[in-house]
Image (cartoon, rainbow, N blue to C red; front, side, top):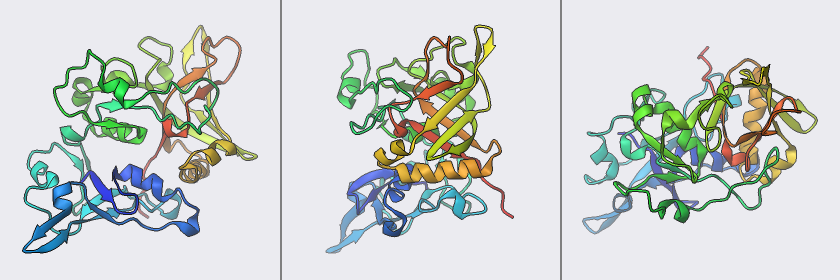
Amino acid sequence: MIINRAFCVELQRIMTINEAHRCYFEPAPAARRRFTFLCSDKICRERDEGGETIRTKVTGVNYDKSPKEEDYYLKPHFRSNTPHSPNCEWLKSSTTQIGGQCGGDDPNREISPKSSDVIDIFLPDTDEAAKPIGGGSDGSITETEIIEEPNIIQTKNLNVTSCLENVVDSYLFLSPDQKRSTHLKLGRAPWRSYTDCFRPIKFYNRGGTDKNSIFYGNIWGRKVGSSFSLFFYDRPEFRGKTWGVELRIEESDLTRYKHGGYVAELLTEVIKRGEPSTTCYFYGSLQPDDATTAEPLRVCVANLGNLVFKLKSKQRK
């Protein structure tokens, strides 16, 4: 049975495994404790059976592991622990799903998610305590502004998230045909296919829509003092010149961000590996916009919540 969300007892909310992964690494190492998870289905989570209250437990696997702790990387996922109600949302979807993260014998096997778990709308992370990375404004937006737009036809319950990693996972799990036929709304931008929303960094300023897009590419990096400097291997080419692209993250950026400890550990591993073993996704822009004076171009995002780093799995030794 595939489980994509669970109720966290300690945080008292439903979350994906990506959100659990980030929240676990939020405290200092000595204060980290594994979470207790129950089924996300409210009726299944606590139900009465013969006068006894049954709590349906779910296990979070590998969300408490950082890449540097293992010689190979195991994908975080949820796994069923105790029997679920016959009417549980995950049991009902198991016969009709078109994919998800498998929690069976091979937890690292990846297949596409069932359609109800694909993200429909991404609300950019605009934490008021954050300061834009690389300059620019945060473009704050609310869920109400998105949902109440008059041109949106409510044909289903929209799957909304402010976690960019959930959007990236939807993109990675969808097949090429599904990416072209499945639509996504990024902030206030119009509905577009997943294919149109995700753009390789080398195609920046080469047709298409640069604004309100998610760019991605393989990176390498180095640490300069207390700052992390990350560079994209691929370079956009326009106006007769090839431009380097740098993402610079200061220690102060990590301190302000609630999941800064998690990001710092990821960046340390990125630099340690050296090879093109990490793909960076970002929702933002490159500065300066006119690209006439500065090189390299700088990645600008509202805050670290609009960055995702996907490390390639290491092989078992």
